[in-house]
Length: 85
Image (cartoon, rainbow, N blue to C red; front, side, top):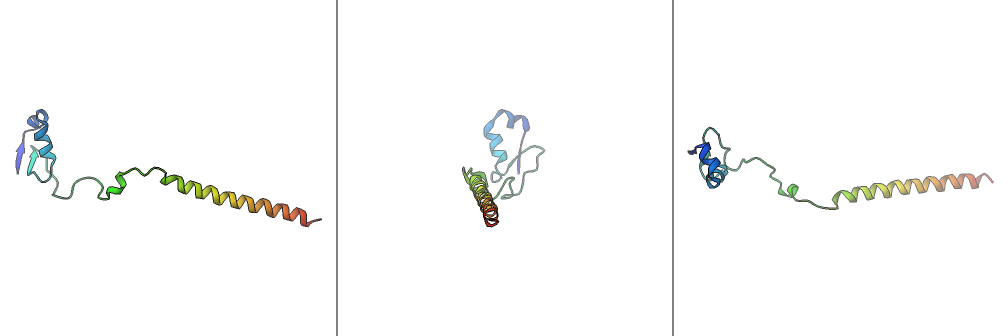
């Protein structure tokens, strides 16, 4: 494992990016690089992608259910009032 001086890594972006690459075999002096394949971050890349509108489906379903419950409650109440006569 070749170590790169931290000053060199700061001045040369290529050396710094090589030191961050797990497969390159390079590291910044004083750092302990992670094992190959155990990098930081999610392994489920679908979590990184924005899916616009996904959260709206649950809200629409909740509003529809609450609307139906309210409708049946109003109909029950009207039926109870009409049934008294």
